[in-house]
Length: 198
Image 1 (tube, rainbow, N blue to C red):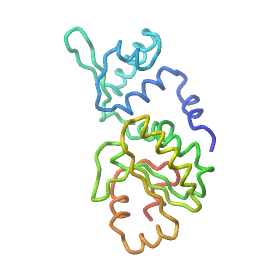
Image 2 (cartoon, one colour; image 1 turned 30 degrees about the vertical axis):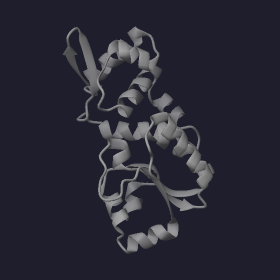
Image 3 (spheres, rainbow, N blue to C red; image 1 turned 90 degrees about the vertical axis):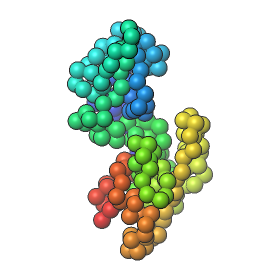
Image 4 (tube, rainbow, N blue to C red; image 1 turned 45 degrees about the vertical axis):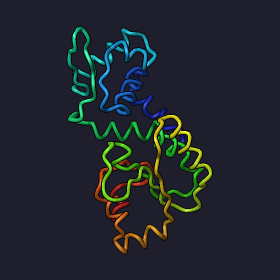
């Protein structure tokens, strides 16, 4: 699969807007003021101010005054919150790397990021971040992708690879691990959620 970032570049004309959306969706619980946002995004102050103001106007961001500073944070009630969250995780970070390297990794039928990884709320008895179902998965390459992301984010990433045959058997047996995966929110990187749970 080609680089997924080019799709966002076509959808969003403003590179500053893409950077801002990426920042807020990968730091959903952290408020930030204008000058700190300028440092984080490494962009000119007027361009950052303009994008933050636009995002506040459409209610993607909420804002509050603290002293003489205005702090912005992601609004989880935004109409397209889940859609944008999925787009960001399919484009950047661990999800973006899996999507960009899907063909090299092997015959992937499904790849997904769990509710715990994306929303920070683990569900059920199996804390897992990334699940891949497929054939001939290059474990060395996958280990490298995960290790790189662990270093970048300074967090441990729990992942598992399941063969297509094992996946079908687990489904027939209504295995607890799969039942919990079916029940939780997730971001599908490869394959459709409807096909995954049928």
